[in-house]
Length: 301
Image (tube, rainbow, N blue to C red; front, side, top):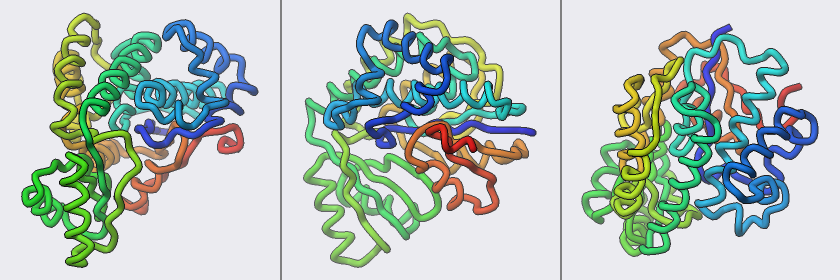
Protein backbone atom coordinates (compact mmCIF):
# COMPACT_ATOMS: atom_id res chain seq x y z
CA UNK A 1 0.00 0.00 0.00
CA UNK A 2 1.36 3.40 -1.05
CA UNK A 3 0.94 6.01 1.68
CA UNK A 4 1.57 9.73 2.11
CA UNK A 5 2.04 11.53 5.42
CA UNK A 6 0.53 14.94 6.17
CA UNK A 7 1.94 17.00 9.05
CA UNK A 8 0.02 19.67 10.97
CA UNK A 9 0.70 23.39 11.05
CA UNK A 10 0.39 25.92 13.85
CA UNK A 11 -3.10 26.27 15.28
CA UNK A 12 -3.77 22.52 15.53
CA UNK A 13 -2.29 22.24 19.05
CA UNK A 14 -4.40 21.52 22.13
CA UNK A 15 -3.64 20.71 25.77
CA UNK A 16 -3.35 16.95 26.24
CA UNK A 17 -1.96 16.38 22.75
CA UNK A 18 -0.27 13.00 22.19
CA UNK A 19 -0.77 11.98 25.84
CA UNK A 20 -2.46 8.66 25.02
CA UNK A 21 0.38 7.80 22.61
CA UNK A 22 2.91 8.63 25.34
CA UNK A 23 1.07 6.46 27.88
CA UNK A 24 0.77 3.44 25.58
CA UNK A 25 4.06 3.32 23.65
CA UNK A 26 7.52 3.22 25.21
CA UNK A 27 9.02 4.41 21.90
CA UNK A 28 6.85 7.56 22.01
CA UNK A 29 7.86 8.16 25.63
CA UNK A 30 11.47 7.91 24.46
CA UNK A 31 10.81 10.50 21.71
CA UNK A 32 9.38 12.91 24.30
CA UNK A 33 12.36 12.37 26.61
CA UNK A 34 14.75 13.00 23.70
CA UNK A 35 12.83 16.18 22.84
CA UNK A 36 12.97 17.45 26.43
CA UNK A 37 16.73 16.79 26.52
CA UNK A 38 17.39 18.36 23.10
CA UNK A 39 15.50 21.56 23.92
CA UNK A 40 16.41 21.79 27.58
CA UNK A 41 12.78 22.30 28.55
CA UNK A 42 9.82 20.12 29.49
CA UNK A 43 8.00 20.20 26.16
CA UNK A 44 6.05 17.15 27.38
CA UNK A 45 4.61 19.20 30.26
CA UNK A 46 3.33 21.89 27.89
CA UNK A 47 1.78 19.23 25.62
CA UNK A 48 0.03 17.32 28.40
CA UNK A 49 -0.75 20.00 31.00
CA UNK A 50 -0.55 23.35 29.21
CA UNK A 51 -1.64 25.90 30.14
CA UNK A 52 -3.16 26.74 26.76
CA UNK A 53 -1.77 30.28 27.01
CA UNK A 54 1.76 28.83 26.97
CA UNK A 55 1.09 26.06 24.46
CA UNK A 56 -0.25 28.56 21.92
CA UNK A 57 3.00 30.56 21.98
CA UNK A 58 4.73 30.16 18.64
CA UNK A 59 7.99 29.22 20.35
CA UNK A 60 6.32 26.28 22.12
CA UNK A 61 3.53 25.06 19.84
CA UNK A 62 5.80 24.64 16.82
CA UNK A 63 8.17 22.09 18.45
CA UNK A 64 5.13 20.51 20.17
CA UNK A 65 3.40 19.88 16.84
CA UNK A 66 6.64 18.60 15.30
CA UNK A 67 6.97 16.14 18.19
CA UNK A 68 3.34 15.00 17.96
CA UNK A 69 3.70 14.35 14.24
CA UNK A 70 6.79 12.21 14.75
CA UNK A 71 5.07 10.37 17.61
CA UNK A 72 2.18 9.40 15.30
CA UNK A 73 4.69 8.09 12.76
CA UNK A 74 6.29 5.96 15.47
CA UNK A 75 2.92 4.37 16.30
CA UNK A 76 2.19 3.77 12.60
CA UNK A 77 5.50 1.91 12.35
CA UNK A 78 4.85 -0.24 15.42
CA UNK A 79 1.35 -1.13 14.29
CA UNK A 80 2.69 -1.97 10.81
CA UNK A 81 0.32 0.53 9.20
CA UNK A 82 2.94 2.72 7.57
CA UNK A 83 3.02 0.87 4.25
CA UNK A 84 5.27 2.15 1.46
CA UNK A 85 5.56 5.87 2.15
CA UNK A 86 5.97 7.65 -1.19
CA UNK A 87 5.46 11.25 -0.05
CA UNK A 88 5.56 13.53 2.99
CA UNK A 89 4.13 17.02 3.11
CA UNK A 90 3.25 19.49 5.81
CA UNK A 91 1.43 22.77 6.26
CA UNK A 92 3.82 25.59 7.16
CA UNK A 93 5.89 24.26 10.10
CA UNK A 94 4.65 20.77 9.14
CA UNK A 95 6.94 20.93 6.11
CA UNK A 96 9.87 20.68 8.54
CA UNK A 97 8.32 17.61 10.17
CA UNK A 98 8.00 16.08 6.70
CA UNK A 99 11.71 16.65 6.11
CA UNK A 100 12.64 15.09 9.45
CA UNK A 101 10.69 11.97 8.49
CA UNK A 102 12.27 11.94 5.03
CA UNK A 103 15.81 12.05 6.46
CA UNK A 104 16.73 15.58 5.33
CA UNK A 105 17.91 16.04 8.93
CA UNK A 106 17.66 14.08 12.18
CA UNK A 107 14.82 14.22 14.71
CA UNK A 108 16.92 16.25 17.18
CA UNK A 109 18.17 18.62 14.48
CA UNK A 110 14.63 19.11 13.18
CA UNK A 111 13.36 19.84 16.67
CA UNK A 112 16.02 22.50 17.18
CA UNK A 113 15.29 24.06 13.76
CA UNK A 114 11.57 24.21 14.52
CA UNK A 115 12.16 25.66 18.00
CA UNK A 116 14.41 28.39 16.57
CA UNK A 117 11.93 29.12 13.77
CA UNK A 118 9.17 29.43 16.35
CA UNK A 119 11.27 31.69 18.56
CA UNK A 120 12.15 34.01 15.67
CA UNK A 121 8.56 34.17 14.45
CA UNK A 122 7.39 34.93 18.00
CA UNK A 123 9.96 37.72 18.11
CA UNK A 124 8.61 39.12 14.82
CA UNK A 125 5.03 38.89 16.14
CA UNK A 126 5.97 40.79 19.30
CA UNK A 127 7.62 43.53 17.24
CA UNK A 128 4.58 44.14 15.02
CA UNK A 129 0.81 44.30 15.19
CA UNK A 130 -0.28 41.64 12.74
CA UNK A 131 -3.45 39.71 12.03
CA UNK A 132 -4.88 37.13 9.64
CA UNK A 133 -8.32 36.37 8.20
CA UNK A 134 -9.84 33.52 6.22
CA UNK A 135 -11.89 34.35 3.11
CA UNK A 136 -14.31 31.52 2.33
CA UNK A 137 -16.40 30.97 -0.78
CA UNK A 138 -14.61 33.16 -3.30
CA UNK A 139 -11.95 32.93 -5.98
CA UNK A 140 -8.22 33.43 -5.49
CA UNK A 141 -8.44 36.33 -7.95
CA UNK A 142 -11.15 38.03 -5.87
CA UNK A 143 -9.05 37.74 -2.69
CA UNK A 144 -5.99 39.02 -4.58
CA UNK A 145 -7.92 42.20 -5.36
CA UNK A 146 -8.55 42.75 -1.65
CA UNK A 147 -4.85 42.17 -0.91
CA UNK A 148 -3.98 44.82 -3.48
CA UNK A 149 -6.63 47.28 -2.28
CA UNK A 150 -5.73 47.00 1.41
CA UNK A 151 -1.97 46.40 1.03
CA UNK A 152 -1.85 42.97 2.71
CA UNK A 153 -0.50 39.57 1.68
CA UNK A 154 -2.08 36.28 0.65
CA UNK A 155 -0.70 33.80 3.17
CA UNK A 156 -2.47 30.49 2.44
CA UNK A 157 -4.12 28.85 -0.55
CA UNK A 158 -5.51 25.99 1.51
CA UNK A 159 -8.20 24.43 -0.67
CA UNK A 160 -10.84 25.52 -3.20
CA UNK A 161 -12.79 28.45 -1.76
CA UNK A 162 -10.51 29.01 1.25
CA UNK A 163 -7.81 31.68 1.10
CA UNK A 164 -6.11 33.33 4.08
CA UNK A 165 -4.77 36.89 4.12
CA UNK A 166 -2.12 38.27 6.47
CA UNK A 167 -0.69 41.68 7.34
CA UNK A 168 -0.96 44.72 9.60
CA UNK A 169 -3.90 44.33 11.99
CA UNK A 170 -5.58 47.62 10.98
CA UNK A 171 -5.38 46.76 7.29
CA UNK A 172 -6.71 43.23 7.84
CA UNK A 173 -9.60 44.65 9.88
CA UNK A 174 -10.40 47.09 7.07
CA UNK A 175 -10.31 44.32 4.44
CA UNK A 176 -12.60 42.12 6.57
CA UNK A 177 -15.06 44.98 7.15
CA UNK A 178 -15.16 45.83 3.44
CA UNK A 179 -15.66 42.21 2.38
CA UNK A 180 -18.54 41.80 4.83
CA UNK A 181 -20.14 45.08 3.80
CA UNK A 182 -19.93 44.19 0.11
CA UNK A 183 -21.13 40.62 0.78
CA UNK A 184 -18.39 39.50 -1.58
CA UNK A 185 -17.72 36.13 0.09
CA UNK A 186 -19.70 33.37 1.74
CA UNK A 187 -17.84 34.00 4.99
CA UNK A 188 -14.93 36.12 6.24
CA UNK A 189 -13.40 35.01 9.54
CA UNK A 190 -10.67 36.84 11.50
CA UNK A 191 -8.26 34.21 12.88
CA UNK A 192 -7.08 33.93 16.47
CA UNK A 193 -3.34 34.10 15.86
CA UNK A 194 -0.37 35.83 17.48
CA UNK A 195 0.71 37.64 14.33
CA UNK A 196 0.82 37.94 10.56
CA UNK A 197 2.40 34.65 9.49
CA UNK A 198 3.54 34.17 5.88
CA UNK A 199 3.55 37.90 5.24
CA UNK A 200 6.07 40.71 4.87
CA UNK A 201 5.84 41.30 8.65
CA UNK A 202 7.83 38.08 9.13
CA UNK A 203 10.81 39.46 7.16
CA UNK A 204 12.96 39.96 10.31
CA UNK A 205 12.36 36.28 11.23
CA UNK A 206 13.19 35.17 7.69
CA UNK A 207 16.54 36.99 7.69
CA UNK A 208 17.59 35.50 11.05
CA UNK A 209 16.28 32.04 10.15
CA UNK A 210 18.37 32.03 6.96
CA UNK A 211 21.44 32.89 9.03
CA UNK A 212 20.65 30.07 11.49
CA UNK A 213 20.21 27.46 8.75
CA UNK A 214 23.61 28.28 7.22
CA UNK A 215 25.18 26.19 9.97
CA UNK A 216 22.85 23.20 9.56
CA UNK A 217 23.62 20.29 7.23
CA UNK A 218 20.76 19.12 5.01
CA UNK A 219 20.71 15.80 3.12
CA UNK A 220 18.73 14.71 0.09
CA UNK A 221 15.36 13.37 1.33
CA UNK A 222 14.76 9.65 0.77
CA UNK A 223 11.14 10.14 -0.36
CA UNK A 224 9.17 12.84 -2.18
CA UNK A 225 8.70 16.03 -0.12
CA UNK A 226 6.71 18.99 -1.43
CA UNK A 227 7.52 22.63 -0.72
CA UNK A 228 4.79 25.05 0.37
CA UNK A 229 6.42 27.83 -1.67
CA UNK A 230 5.67 26.30 -5.09
CA UNK A 231 3.72 23.12 -4.31
CA UNK A 232 6.38 21.16 -6.20
CA UNK A 233 8.60 18.25 -5.22
CA UNK A 234 12.02 19.26 -3.84
CA UNK A 235 15.13 17.11 -3.47
CA UNK A 236 18.28 19.29 -3.67
CA UNK A 237 19.43 20.10 -0.09
CA UNK A 238 20.37 23.71 -0.88
CA UNK A 239 17.09 24.32 -2.71
CA UNK A 240 15.16 22.81 0.21
CA UNK A 241 16.93 25.17 2.60
CA UNK A 242 16.19 28.19 0.38
CA UNK A 243 12.51 27.30 0.21
CA UNK A 244 12.17 26.77 3.96
CA UNK A 245 13.56 30.28 4.42
CA UNK A 246 11.25 31.80 1.78
CA UNK A 247 8.27 29.97 3.25
CA UNK A 248 8.38 32.21 6.36
CA UNK A 249 7.15 35.18 4.28
CA UNK A 250 5.60 33.51 1.21
CA UNK A 251 2.17 32.11 0.41
CA UNK A 252 1.60 28.51 1.54
CA UNK A 253 0.34 26.64 -1.55
CA UNK A 254 -1.19 23.71 0.28
CA UNK A 255 -3.71 22.80 -2.41
CA UNK A 256 -0.91 22.45 -4.98
CA UNK A 257 1.13 20.29 -2.57
CA UNK A 258 -1.78 17.88 -2.06
CA UNK A 259 -2.70 17.67 -5.75
CA UNK A 260 0.91 16.94 -6.72
CA UNK A 261 1.27 14.28 -4.00
CA UNK A 262 -1.95 12.62 -5.21
CA UNK A 263 -0.37 12.18 -8.66
CA UNK A 264 1.91 9.55 -7.06
CA UNK A 265 -1.16 7.25 -6.89
CA UNK A 266 -1.32 7.25 -3.11
CA UNK A 267 -3.62 4.60 -1.60
CA UNK A 268 -3.87 6.24 1.84
CA UNK A 269 -3.09 9.70 3.22
CA UNK A 270 -2.45 9.85 6.98
CA UNK A 271 -2.75 13.16 8.80
CA UNK A 272 -0.16 12.90 11.58
CA UNK A 273 -1.08 15.25 14.40
CA UNK A 274 -4.00 16.93 16.14
CA UNK A 275 -6.98 18.84 14.83
CA UNK A 276 -8.12 17.02 11.71
CA UNK A 277 -7.80 20.26 9.72
CA UNK A 278 -5.59 18.83 6.96
CA UNK A 279 -7.94 15.92 6.32
CA UNK A 280 -10.82 18.37 5.95
CA UNK A 281 -8.86 20.45 3.46
CA UNK A 282 -7.88 17.34 1.51
CA UNK A 283 -11.53 16.33 1.14
CA UNK A 284 -12.35 19.80 -0.19
CA UNK A 285 -9.46 19.55 -2.65
CA UNK A 286 -10.63 16.12 -3.86
CA UNK A 287 -13.46 14.31 -2.11
CA UNK A 288 -12.14 10.98 -3.45
CA UNK A 289 -8.82 11.24 -1.60
CA UNK A 290 -8.53 8.48 1.04
CA UNK A 291 -7.44 10.41 4.14
CA UNK A 292 -7.46 9.49 7.83
CA UNK A 293 -6.58 11.72 10.82
CA UNK A 294 -4.37 10.19 13.51
CA UNK A 295 -3.73 12.04 16.75
CA UNK A 296 -4.53 9.81 19.73
CA UNK A 297 -4.63 6.07 20.46
CA UNK A 298 -8.34 5.67 19.60
CA UNK A 299 -7.72 6.97 16.05
CA UNK A 300 -5.70 3.86 15.24
CA UNK A 301 -8.53 1.43 16.03
